[in-house]
Image (cartoon, rainbow, N blue to C red):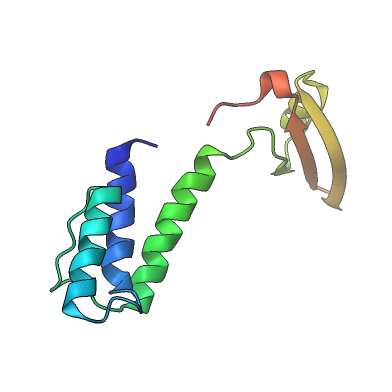
Length: 124
């Protein structure tokens, strides 16, 4: 993740957290702002720093989701619902796929769970 992306994702979270419990005096708030600027290169605006639990939760979700996406496994299982024999045949006979389960849903519908071999996994 680039530093600019990290800053844009972290800043809303910091702004919606408000000041820390230990930073209740003006002197400590000033020290906290200096620490954040030193570590994150983000200058906090006191008029925008207030506790907003919903905004904080959303900002935290955005930061964590983007971080997890980069670490996601490429060969996770895929589930497809098929009613076409040609597609079923293409998936099950492809040497790059490992078929885990095949379930008959009804006469015209089949569920196939498969994943790709590590050498053939898609790059996300």
